[in-house]
Length: 251
Length: 251
DNA sequence: TTGACAAAGATCGTTAACAATCATGAAATA
DNA sequence: TATTTCATGATTGTTAACGATCTTTGTCAA
Image (cartoon, rainbow over all chains, first blue to last red; front, side, top):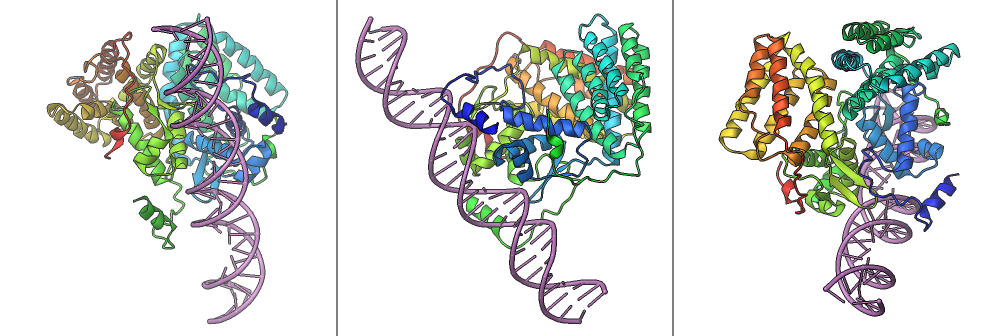
């Protein structure tokens, strides 16, 4: 499979001439690199990769079937997003936020998310809101199927899509970072699945937005965040799982 | 010079044992890389490096006296922060935000900065506020000396220190990104020095915070941001300067 | 003169080998 | 037996050479 890819890339046909599309405001234009980053990012988001898990270059090379350089660049990108930590001459480890960082993340979300929902509630005709309704349907479906990782992922993604509905790329980018870090923190300090089952809080928030009630929306959001934060057990930390990366198999 | 450095690094004395200090929540633990990123970052912030300026690997290698690998990693980090854009097989260019991005940045700042100053105004005893007073003194000094680049840098850094005063690392990180992008935008669309001379608006904002008047502080801040945005000329763009990088000389 | 085409040069992407560092475990000593 | 020391193996950091792609320049023909 990999060989096919490389053959395509090395062939003389210019099927994908990588035309200079400056609109691509993406981090990396390389599909391989992006894929590696996405896979690890997703595994962290879904709490399948526990904090402090070591990501050795060799294992990543074999699992992804790419050279060391790609893996190295992907790790650097992940570290710049705070998803992993690079230790000199010691390797890459999944980030493990401490209590102080956890406090900062929730404080930042308490500060930044209210303006977002307030803005959305002031324009309930926003077309991005239909995506949120669909999203909540997905959440319910995953919850009924007891698909734990999917519930966790969708639960965080709701807030990302909330930011996405503003149509502002920077708002989206920042909410992504905050949600990712929140996911890590819930993975570390989360007592059982308490924090990952917000019942129908998301639906309530969306309803308040759609009915054009900013105050209620903000109120529901803040209590939702407080609920998540309150569900954390700040004293017992999860162990760093040490298995190899068969976790990163499918898309 | 380079050889001396390498000799130090390769020597057997463990003068800097690079002890695993996990508190270092920094992007890169490598001093060289950090230095390169900082130098380019600063040059962009001070608008000495114009948008669309090409940053070839070779020139950066010679100016910084490091190998190609370090330069490559630094460029990747800068691109992940949106400061430069990497084009496949074509090199690295200083980012050049368009009108749409400019709109998004100011919209995001209008959304996120008010909660910050509101928070600060609710606790005027905050010790971080003394740094802001000192900062305004620096701004005035630089303005009297007609030190253009310094004025630009300090003008942006005021908002960063505003975020820093919250003591929240994520708030700081996000404001850094927004201010950096703002600096780029002002460099592109800024008509003359209109946007970089906020008179004493910063001082007024700080006063409102210190007197514990959140409403006034927010009001002053929003009008300040609107003032900057209004000073932009969205139709005439700066040319990409094409000189080599003697711009990156001193610290 | 202008346009297209081709070759040369420059720049970036990739790979593989080497060097340096860290982790592991055995052996020796107290 | 516990502890230290040292040697071995594994992993990361670095370099240099090679290959691919793009840009530029020069030539030829219309």
